[in-house]
Each structure stands twice: as C-alpha cells, then as structure tokens.
Length: 99
Image (cartoon, rainbow, N blue to C red; front, side, top):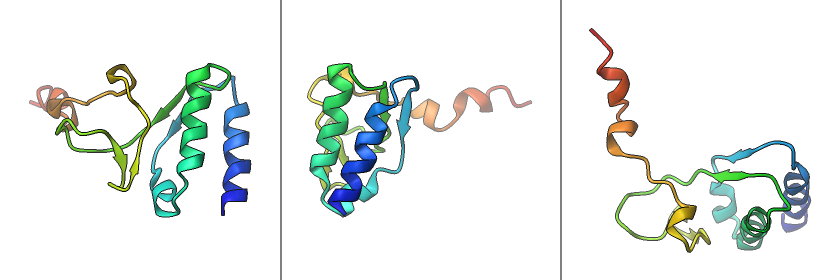
C-alpha cells in the first residue's frame, strides 16, 4: 500500500501547472498513511509543488483538523485553514434568492 501511495504522491507533486483539490482523504487515515500526508503538506509549503487544497470536513470547535478523527492534518498556522461559515454551508445565500 505504501509503495503505491508513494508513487501517487510523487505524481501529484509533479503537477505544477494545476491546482489540486484533494477531497475524500479518508483512505490516508484508514491505512495510516501519515507519511504520505506529510509529503503532500511539505510539498505545498515549499512551493515546488502545485497549490493543494485538502478538503477535511470537521466541526468548528477550535480543535486541530484531523481526517476521520484519526489522522491529524499538519496545518499549524490559522492561515492554513479555511472555516466555512454555517450560513454558507446551509446555502443561505441561494435560499435568499428563491421567491
């Protein structure tokens, strides 16, 4: 599993011309692939990889984000996280347009 994952991560980090949106990262937690997650984060931080957005749904309770509650996401700075407002998640901006 780790060998296959290493190849996938290497290929992802080579895609410098396009922004990557990584949704559904649950397999990283399920198979204990903390090293792969660290490589993705490190590559994005160094700037020699594409812009990477890792989508990790979590509760806005002030705790550090983690994938499936088991694999902490190494994002120590608040600027590395984006919290979606409840109104946006409820699609309130679209509901206001409906007659």
